[in-house]
Image 1 (tube, helix red, strand yellow):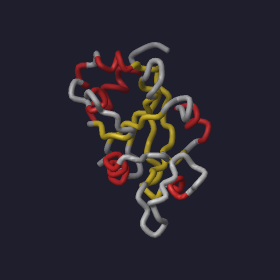
Image 2 (tube, one colour):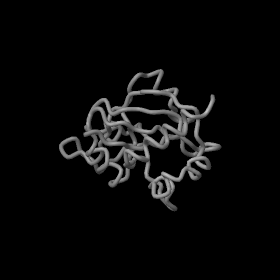
Image 3 (cartoon, one colour):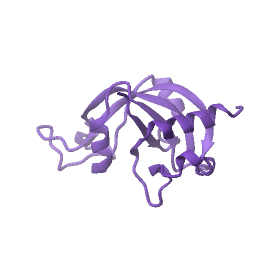
Image 4 (tube, helix red, strand yellow):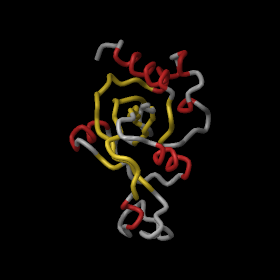
Length: 154
């Protein structure tokens, strides 16, 4: 059974268009244990909402899918990476990534618009103080976001 996820990325660092251009990409740099554990639960074929965070305005940009399950994030071992973690060892890696691939670009749905969708009233994304870069969605939440985006004209 497929699961549904939300992936947040700053569009000036890595946008949905970057993912389309690259065809697949490791979701690197996650340095929160809860978000890492969510990635460890992911299965190939799980679907995700690609969300542009720290943008004006923030919001939904597209649909992606998990193309490869969790494996050690190589940036944790690279002293030249901003995600380097000197406490993480190759023999006992602390951080993982999943590989994601694009599915469909969506008409942009801003955070303010998401707040107006009744089916998202309990969505973690809209919860105060929730700053996780990776989080689960229910199937109902995923479908409500996609339906709202596709019901609009570009």
